[in-house]
Image 1 (cartoon, rainbow, N blue to C red):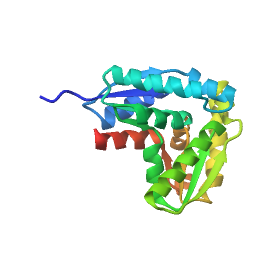
Image 2: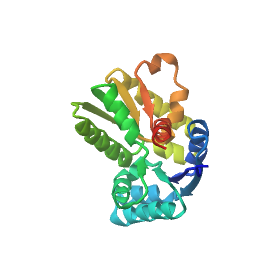
Image 3: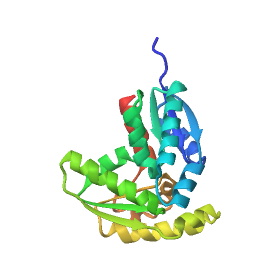
Length: 220
C-alpha cells in the first residue's frame, strides 16, 4: 500500500487557504495537505519596497520547515516572494513550486502578446520577469503588456472589496483588447473573473491557483 503524498502550502494571506483547500479537494483527492501562513511577509515587502535578504531568509526557513513537517512537495502561493521561492527551491531536498510558474508556462504557450495585471507593483515585477524567463526557456518571442491597478490593493485591505473588484474589472476590460491572454499576478484577483460577463472573457484570463494545482496533480 502506497503512503499518501503530502503537499505543504506556504501562504502570505490566510484568505487563500479555503481557495487552495477547495482546489486540492478537486484535483488532488488522495493528497494530504497542511498550511503555513505568515501575512507579515507581504506587509514587510510593501513597507521595505522590495524583497529584502531577511524576508528571503524567512521564506527559506518556511520551506525547510515544510520539508521537516513531512511535505513531499511544497507550493508557495504568493507571487510577490517568487524570487525567494526559487532561491529556496534550489536549496531544498523537496520539490518547491512557485504558484505562478505553471500559469506563466501556460501563457507562453497560449499566445505572443501576454498581458499581466496586478494590484501591487511588488507582484507585477516578479510575475512579468517570470513570464519573460519562461518564454526564453521555451524559446518563444513574446510581447509583454503590464498593468497595475492603482488603489485596488488598498481598497481590498481597507475592506472595500467592491471597489477593488471595480478597478480590476476596468483594467481587465482595457487589457483584453490589446493581448492574446491575460495573467492575474495575484491569486486574490481570481474572484473578479467569476463576476465578469461573457463579453469580457473573450480573451483568456489565467489565474495561478487552479493552474498550479492542476500542474501538481500531473506531477504528484
